[in-house]
Structures are given as C-alpha cells and as structure tokens.
Image: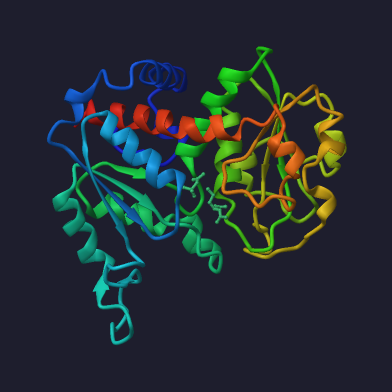
Length: 315
Ligand code: AN0
Ligand code: CP
C-alpha cells in the first residue's frame, strides 16, 4: 500500500484487521521499520485524537514525527491555481507540498470539507494534490469526504466487542449546532459495507448521504424502528449532502438517550469524538457501561499503526 485515503486502498480488509490485532498485541515489535524515517503531519483543522494517536502510532514504529498546524504559525496557503496572490495568503500549496515532501517519508493530512462547494469537496482537491505533488506516501487524517483511520478503528472496536457473527450496526444522525462534514458518516458506511454486518442508517429526511457511499443501503427514517434489536449504535451528526452543507434539523428527539437504547439488544454506544453531550447523546448513555467511546478512541493508535506499518513495508 502506498497511500491511504479509503478502505479501497487496503490490499485486503481481513489482512489489515489481522495486522491491527498484531500491532495491538505487540506495539513495539516493528521499530526497525520506522528507523530514520520521518512522519510529517499537516493539520488544516483542529484535532485531539488524530494528532496524538497518529504521533503515537508513528513513534511505536520507530519513526520521528513533525507536526504543522497550517493555521497556527505557518504561512497562510492559497489552494486555488491561477489566483493573483495579492491577498492575505503569502504561499501557494503547489510550492508548500513538494517542500513538505522533501522533509518527509510519510505525510499525514487533515483537510476537512469546506462545505460551500460540493464539487471541490467531493473531488478531494487538497489531499489529491498532496498525493500528486509530495512524492511520498500520504495518509488521510480526515479529508473532505472520508475519515478512514476512524472507520478502521471503529471496525477493530466492533470486532472486539461483538457477541454475534453478524451484529446489527446502526448509524444514527443526531443534532448539532454547527454544520459538520459528511466524512465520518460516509466512511463508516463505506467500511461497514465491506463487512458481513447488518447495517442500518437512520436520519431525518433530507440528510441522505451521497449515493456512491450508500450504494444499495436504504435509509430508515424512523429512528426507533432502526434501533430495534441493534447491537451497536454509532451516533454522528452531519450536514446535508443534497442541500449541500445545510443544517435542516435540530430535532432534539434524535439525541441518543435511554429511551432509544431501551429497544436495542443491549447495544454498545459508539461515537468518534469529540461529542457534544445532550445534543448527540445523553450523559447517561455516554457514561453507561455500554458506552465504548474511550476504547474506540484508543483503537485510533491501532488502526494508524497498522496503516503506517503496511506503508513502511513498501517504502
Ligand atoms: C469533525 C467532523 O464531524 O468531521 C471531526 C470528527 C472526527 N467534528 C467536528 O468538527 C466537531
Ligand atoms: N475522532 C477524531 O478524529 O478526533 P479528533 O478530531 O480529535 O482528531
């Protein structure tokens, strides 16, 4: 594997899972792979988990790490070609990328959807330019349409906690005060569709995800019905795809509480974090013994280490 931006980049999902369980058991067994190799992490957006877990994964593999927050201390970057650069952005991405590439053996990039222009976001312009111009392997740390390191960690977490071979996994929309990208939800659906699990997606009308992610999955608009007999509840807010980037509902009845959890089959509760309590999920549910959000976040090291290991083996 050279770049990692989606589940499709993995040579094989089952093998990737076994690499993940192996690095979880033996985190320091492959330090020779990263010796004298440098991971540069570029953040266009904030992060707690991705920032720390990616660094930790790289360090476990013996790599050195460097982190750059583009919006805190670096030159502001112009991303459009052809612009007369007489504004507030002194540097162009087209110089910045190869320069960063010259310092790095692997680059991690976080560049969220702008949520103003669907075409620009869904073409994955920023991360694709890193792939095209950096000369080194590129790992998505959440791009415009996907968050594959998160989905991989989610899959590892479900594999660890499932009590049935084919658990019922429910992705539910929940309200949020700000417009958020569809990336986590898109990616979760994309990864779950690669498994044998029963996947149900529930959201208010208008929040349909892009058809290329949903495939043959039909949304269930009745949240209570979707939750019936579920083994895993995966909550997430996203803004509308069709009315691109819009907030169409703040219906608080979609906030995951004991009322909905009661109709599940003792389901585990998951969320990628950061989560707004009592918007997305009630205090009671996130604090309950069925909440596995911390284990899920811990597995971010595991998914990233598996990905970096597979990349380093090919450098
Ligand atoms: C981001 C999102 O929804 O894409 C990152 C989640 C991992 N969340 C927020 O901006 C709150
Ligand atoms: N889940 C996740 O990616 O968290 P951060 O935004 O804090 O990195």
